[in-house]
Image 1: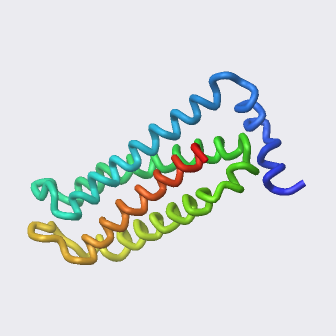
Image 2: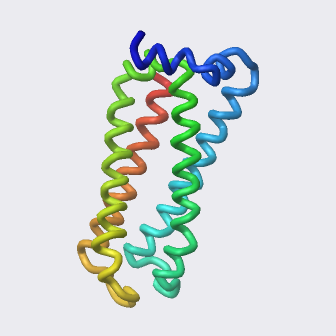
Length: 156
């Protein structure tokens, strides 16, 4: 038995396959958590691109980052649960590795930004510096790519 069989044979996977409403509710939770995740990321990234300059950057980050992290944790959990229902089909889907790759790149971009770039910037009253704008554009692009790949998994 390999890891995909082990995942498919989990009790929770069996439950999700055998009940009428469990999987649709998990799917709905996944979609809603992604909406919150992308919404918070988009709001912050648009601020980094120079929109809504009246909003102080650090308080905005303190407000949005916990929401983004919570939404990501819910999206990852519900995503795993959906994967567990039929892991062989999902694993074999050509969009699945792309989605995981884009998630990894988005995480690396966010980690680098918050650990290296963000501590060095203050206020951003004028036009944001190029590294800040690049990180924001990359973030938006990567998360949109995650969403597109997720939808393609569902419909291919």
